[in-house]
Length: 143
Length: 143
DNA sequence: CGGTATCCCAAGCGATACTG
DNA sequence: CAGTATCGCTTGGGATACCG
Image 1 (tube, rainbow over the protein chains, first blue to last red):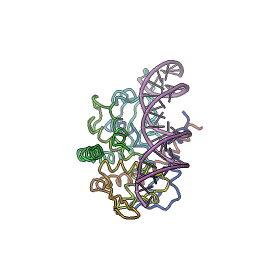
Image 2 (image 1 turned 180 degrees about the horizontal axis):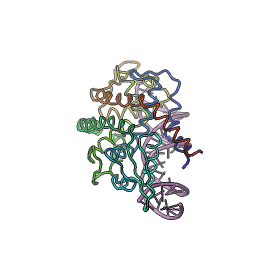
Image 3 (image 1 turned 60 degrees about the horizontal axis):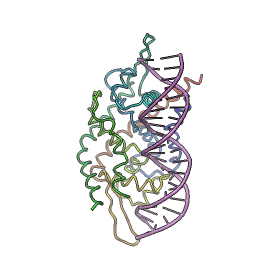
Image 4 (image 1 turned 135 degrees about the horizontal axis):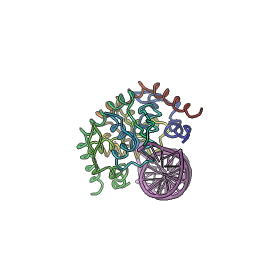
């Protein structure tokens, strides 16, 4: 795959948010751009799972595949490349037979992990409340 | 729109992550489910922008549309409904002419906002570093 | 073992037109 | 003003087969 392809995905989406008023109280439009980039990276189907799996120690490709059931080879490779390009994950290949490749969180990746853990904590904390609201909302219009 | 439709989207995706070993060091599979639900909700194109815009005070529908340039009516309505169903946003309609509808963050929504702000801060802090990694990565294979 | 390449369906989302 | 309905493009991502 070309680097060009990797650049196209997830990046040029924000083009249409540029050069506009900027109404949010907590961040300006440029900040909004940044956070959207991070959300695009981390908000996808597999990134967080991979980051979580790499949290404590390097993991090799096939072990990642086993550790994250349901992921396809395609998405594992693709997501790893995105994370690598962003500098969150490092790739080390050992010239052995059979070949061995290990992925690990970089310092940057670890710093993001702590933020993600905060989100995970929020999720766990308020999961029950969210469920309540959902069922309430759903039952409202079926009556 | 039926509640059924709202339930289908973003929810049943996690079906294939169920009942599996659970390899992550920082959360079990159930937690992973929760965080994926939150990421599905917040990781989309407009949710964070809306939450940020509602941060300080209630905003009416048309003002939201103006404040978030580029958003379509369809996505504004749809995203608001999702946020409302989750209990992050409240909707109040005033029976006047012309009609007025105000959206506001709930207590739950405010609690999420602080977590999101942490992510925004991380994004702003490490944006430069991320850019560096990206250009480095991209220039690597064009040589 | 650690990937790539291709095919294809479904979800996400914008544009446009219409309504109470 | 505050939505809803429909259409059609574009992206995400699974399945499968193949390669160094």
